[in-house]
Every structure is written in C-alpha cells, then in structure tokens.
Amino acid sequence: MGKRILMPAQEINLDNVQYVQERIEAPHLTGFLLKLFVWLVESRLFGHAILSVLKRKNKMTQILRHTVIPEEPMFFPEFPPQEPETAVDFVDEDTLPALRVDHALKCLPSYDTSKASRVARSNSFLYWTIRDYANAYRSGQTTPSDVAECIISAVEESLNRNPPLIFFISFNANELRKQAAASTRRFEEGSPLSILDGIFIAIKDDIDCYPYPSKGGTVWIHKVREVKQDAVCVSRLRSCGAILAGKANMHELGMGVTGNNPHYGTTRNPHMIQHYTGGSSSGPAAIVASGLCAAALGTDGGGSVRIPSALCGVAGFKTTYGRTDITGSICEGGTVEIIGPIATTVEDVMLVYAAILGSSTVDLARLKPMPPCFPMLGTTDNLNLLGSLKLGKYSSWFADVYSNEVSETCEWILTQVANSFGTETREIILPELEEMRAAHLVSIGSEALNHIYPHFENGQRMALSYDVRLNMALFESFLAADYVVAQSLRRRIMHYHMEAFKHVDVIVTPTTGMTAPKIPSSSLNIGETDFVTSGYLMRFVLAPNLIGLPAISIPVGHDKDGLPIGLQLIGQPWAEATLLRLASAIEEIAPPQKRPVVFYDVLKGV
Image 1: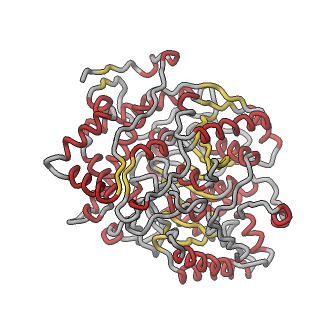
Image 2: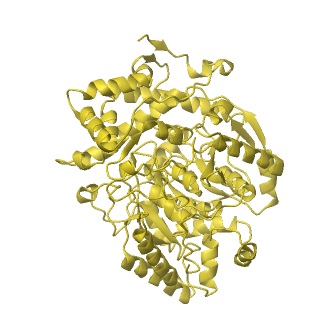
C-alpha cells in the first residue's frame, strides 16, 4: 500500500474536492453467528487477521498507517475566537440554576393558556410542554403527586405489554412518590423553586443520579463504581425542583447507536414498537416520545442524543464541548462527549439546557467559553435575525442517504424556512469526511477503553454483550500512533468547518441517513452487529463530536410508514442561541406531529 501525503489543510482547493460516498464493508450478524464471529475476533489465532482485513477494506489502515499529515495533533477541541451572538439574554455561569431557568423562561413567547381547548377542538396532537405542566400545577388542575401515580401506572403497563417496552433500567416508585410529594408541598405553600419544579425528567443510565446505581447498560459496572452523589448536571436539575424519574435504558456502555440491549431488554420505538429507538440514549428518547416525562438527559459522544431523538420524533440538543460539566458520568474525561437534553419541543430543550449549563473549572480555563445566552424568541429582532441567517448545505453529502424520503423531507423544510423567514441556503464543501469518520472512531474508541479499563476485573469482559465485545476488540487494535494521527485529522476537520463558517451561520443536514430500522427478532437475546446500518445512522452526526460543535436535531416529518425524520442544525462554537432560535422557527412551520402508537397522557391521567 503506497504512502499518501496530504497537503496542509489551508492549501486545499475546495473546487477540486470530490465527495466520496461512504461504503462500509462488514458482516451483519445476530444470534449464533454473532457469537461465533466474536469468539474468532477475540481469539489470539484469528483475531488480528480478521480485524486487519476489516480495517483495510474500510480504508482505516490507509488513513491511519499510510498517510502523512502535516498538521500538529489537536487533543481536544480548540476553538478560534467567536463574535458574541445578538438579540440574546446573557447569563453568568455562576448564577444559580433556577435563576438561569428564569432568564430562559423570560426569553420565550407568551404562554398560550388556550392550548388544551384548541387541541381538543381540532382533534390534533400536541405534546404537553413544561409550561403546560407548570400551568396545571399552579391552577390546581393536578399535582406532581397525581402525575407521579400516572407515571407509575404507565411504567407498569409498559412492562406488561407484549413485547415489553423497557423504558427504564432502574425505577423506584417510592422514590418517585417521595420527590413528587415534596414538590406538591412546595406548590401548596406557594413556593415552587422554578418552572421546572414538578417536571419529571428521566436520566440516562450512565449519568449519576443518587440513590440509583449507574449501570451504563451493563450488569456489572455499578458493582465496582459506586454512586455517592448526583452528577453535576443532575444536581442542578434537582436544585430547580425537577423530579428525577429514574435511570433510562441505553445501548450498553454507549457503544452502539441502535439501542439494542440484551441484558435488560431493548427499548421499543413508541411510533412503531417493532423498530429501534436509536441509541445510545434509547430510553431517554423513548420516554419523552411516549409522554412519560417532559424531558430527559442523555450523553452524546457519537450522535447518542441526536440519533434517537430523530428516530423517535423529539428534539435532542448537543451543546458545545465543555459547555456543560459532565462530572459524575461514566464517560467523564473524554474529548467528544457531552450531556444534553431531550424534550418534545425546542422551548423545553432550552429550559432544561438553562438548568444544566455551566463548564467545569478545567474547561473554563482551557476552552475560555463565550458567556452562555438564550435567544429572545418573542421579539421583533428575532424575526429580523432569522431572515439574515445563511445556511450551509453540502449537497452531495446531504443526499447520501439510505432513503430518499429522508433527504427530500429535509430539503422541503429548508425551502419552507426560506419562504417563511427569508433564510438563504448556500452550497459549502466539507473535505475529508472519510478521514473524519476514522478520526472519530479512534478517538471515541480509545477514550471509551480509558473509561472502562479501571473498572475491569476478572470475567467482566465476558459479561458484556457480544456487539460491545466486538467493538472493544476493534478499539484495542488501535495503536497509540493511530490516536495521534486521529488528533491531527481533528485539526484538519476543525479548519474545514471554520472555513465554512466564514460564509454561513449554520450547517444543515439530515440527522440520520435513514428512519428507525426494524429490530431483528434474533437480536433480542444475543445482540446484533450491523456496521452498515450504524453508518447510515451516524452519517451526519460525527463532526459536532469530533470538533466539539453544538448541534440540535428537530423533527420535520415522517416517512411513508409514519416513522419520524429529523433535521440537524450544526452551529459555530458557543452559538447555542442561534441554533435554538432557528430550531424554534423550523418547529413552527414543520408538519404536525403524529401521536405515537404508544403514548401516555400522564398530565390528564390517560
């Protein structure tokens, strides 16, 4: 294999860049064949040869071992200086979470108290928002304790279905009642802590939420990693009065994007229960989509908030790397992960984001983040700013999907946005997407091993599901030199995106290249490996993780089978407010949401 020498990124002529369609060559295996393949890969006799062939066929060897890269490594996202956003409300990171939430609340349009009657008259479907719950509590229509009983009944019903929906890994009815009773007392005394008081929020199983264990979707990690307190972001939600509903199901250790979990059962998509939710934040997205909770927290190291949000028809927000403190999560310490909110509406995403934002001391020093802020959505300036936005679209990449319904629906909504708000869509070029995928895989894989190795004891590798063991074997095949090459590629990918942002404000893509795939029955007990499907699900989501950019997925329609389609907006570093502004506008003109097949109206007790 010949050596390839890359030109410095700043010397690349974008006019000469040719888009290369992603082609993944790997077997799709379930059941006994998956067990056999993993045994072969883990064996000393065959493993190295099999992984070498897989990496060579998928260009990993050429990219990592036979390419000369002139750029220095970038071991975590290094952002160039950014201009402050306009028509926003700035907040201090040191402000109490409840006060930040109040700032965000004042940036929203006026609350429509007639929503419930309008929905009933029109026979249409709308999710209840955080403000709907808050209004119901304040008006005495219901209490957090009443809603808690509805949630407890719904969780029991979801487990008794055939097949069971498996929303939670850890759920304690008495713990829920206790939190709800405390919230109910605060409302009775006229002293709720914030608009989030009494709002039920599910927490992904790799984020600490005391007194629950953090299992990370495994059957063992909670035995060697004790939870003694809340993760930072969870404690911020608790200080706002949020009711933490339990630990939501997930793809084991976050090492997969379908949500398949043979240990606890695979969470089902509320829109079509024979289909995957996407992952790895499978439980959080399904819980929100089914109406059980108004919001959830997930982790996102490779699209794990945005993918399931898109497949389940809800909104999922990945913040700029370092904007939220991820201390107290299993994945803390990595360079691609964040903790982000999932909710049914952009305004609810914004309220939860207001509560959890705030960088760690380390990230404040090394990243020097721009002050956090919220878009003022109820002002005239908001409309003017929307009309000035320039959206970047790499058409060849945008259209590289499994189903044309996905790209056509996303293209249609962009036309509607232009017609309604005057936005302009410009063509951009983003080179070296193959290299970006390789760099992300090496980065997240190496960092995942770094997180897990300290907790390994005898026999625990064998307690992992087969698809995770296969991923572990692949990650262990990477050299230290591969990791350094990946970080040099990270610097090049950052350069290309920053060049694009000199001409556009937001980059737009489909969130996923396909709608929710069907769950093979043979995968339920053993698991599944399907790198081709994973490639379609992850096609557009990796840049925000590798180079730390903010991104949001919002629902914009459905395919012919009624499965949701998501649009992804990728923003400039620290430009969360711009993404929330545009996402809110798109939400206004998107087609009506469809009631999921599985939906629990816990606010109304249905």
